[in-house]
Length: 422
Image (cartoon, rainbow, N blue to C red; front, side):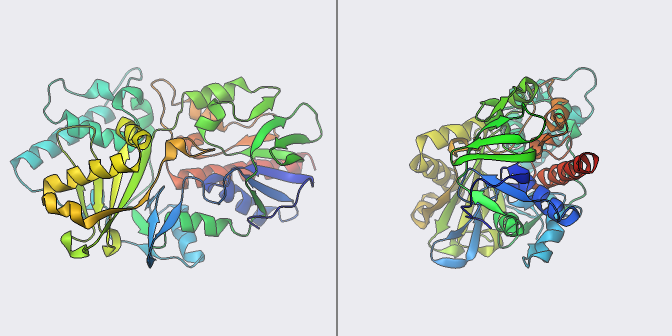
């Protein structure tokens, strides 16, 4: 159970990282190989990884997702069905990009902007030849390039110049629309993980796979051993060498370095007077520059604004701290609703994923030419060390259900390896 402090026992399978992939793999192994002993190791103090739900102080029924929040491709997203199984509520209100309520006016500028955005994404999808970066498909001098840059940054968590067109074109979350979990995506994933034996606060520092029998796993709380290890940590953790492999696995580190985590941070602002803003309505801070926030006003009708920042803007605001993030968001909201809106706002919660220990960012993107490395990252090593996580997914990277699918796939491979080597 989470928080179990038992130490030292040998395990059949040790899973490193208690995010969506690690939890999915553990639950799959429990279902198909109940005879195996499984232990989940998590360096942080909670289950869920980049899915993290917190409460709104003083409002027990309002849950805020500081990490992933939307069930993308909800009709075939495994988490949609799991939500019902664990007693949570899937809200089917349309997302802003699926026809949900938008604040933007329907005027000539808005139509011109949407036409420019549509044309840009058509250019991406019709790209032929060698891989290039997303910025290469901008039209020089197009007045809507700022708006396009903002959207592209939300998608990848990085500026257009850093991200691969080929990788973008492989992305396929499955049939929409996109829905939400009322109690929170983080609540969903952590609740699904609750039946798994787990130890929190255990940081793995070295994996010794020199010997044919069992794999040594060195941690800040002693050494364990296992017959198989599943690594589900983020690409930024792998690329930084936070876990040493003995012998080294340079191909994994190189793949991880070219599939880095972009950054997307959220700031939740409490509204003193909820009626000051329309319910469940979306707006963009600015349509003329890339460094802008996107805002969900009163999600589920709650007295909050969910501000979303990505790329270099998110990195700058995270470095400068919550007052800078609050000031930026308040300025953008005041430009739409007037200066008096500032008096209604206060900080309720804020994420800082780049600075979050043992994670270091939000979701992976591929550098130009690196999309095929997702397969390299996912490939098992010698049938004993396995890898999973959103970055291992060719088409559903950056999503919690992509992570889930890679976890299930890894679990099936582990089960198969034990049948060959009982």
